[in-house]
Amino acid sequence: MTITHSLKDLRQYHREASNFFAAELTMLKEVLPLITDEKQAKISILLMSAGQTGAALLQLASQTDVFTDESTMLARSFIEKLTNFCYLCVCDEQEYKRFLLHPIYKQYHLTGNINWEDNIENYNAYIKEKENEQKRLKQIPLVQEALALFSETKSNLNWTKKTISERIKALQDWGKMLDVFFFINKDYLYSKASEALHGSLFGCGYELGFDHYKYNESDPEYIDKKLYRQSTSLLIHLGFLIHETFTVLQYTNAITELWDYSYENRNNAFGLLYHVLEKKMPGKKKE
Image (cartoon, rainbow, N blue to C red):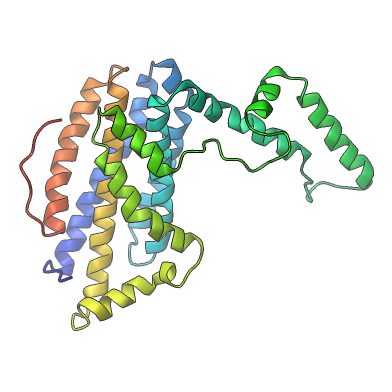
């Protein structure tokens, strides 16, 4: 896979991609007080958390030659948070309820867990108090509902039984956004991020060395070029996800001015992406 751009040019493209992503992150923060839809407002913490993850990712991306794997891991978290938010905006009421009640179910079980940082002088009394606290919690109707929905005995159930591919498919079936960016990000990053998260040899950098051997071992700057190109593509694609999140929001919230600005920002980033990847830019059409 030959890269004809110079390393100097790729560094400049990376700065432009960072600026694009930073602008989308700023708008993600600005959209929060504009959300008036009650259901979406209740889950807006996902957008807040995604913004924090994106800000951390942006800092790591400024040292792309050092934190490649770490950026990939954060990118996976970023993708899943925005995917979950958009999915929750279109899913059925049962799925939405599972998301809201899941932390109550988790807190119930955590209350019964042993905390080895506690000062445990009398172990039996300590365990008894844990059991009593769970009994008190079970008197609360909302806790009862959460346990009925999940489990009183199993403590590690996920909030949804849908895989991320199924959640993205729900967005595709909804049909009112460019869901393709969610598929691209999932397919491009998820397996790589898993390898890095689980500490495999492939995930810890083998891929870069293998690519150098396979594609262009004669170019001493190939690895650096690939790192900058990958990071540039990553930042742009994640910015695209933010814009599609705005698309979901604009159907039920008055964010037209922000959406329009993001749309223009995204269009400019399209041109940069295709240039960096050395591909022909297709005809543009407003969605």
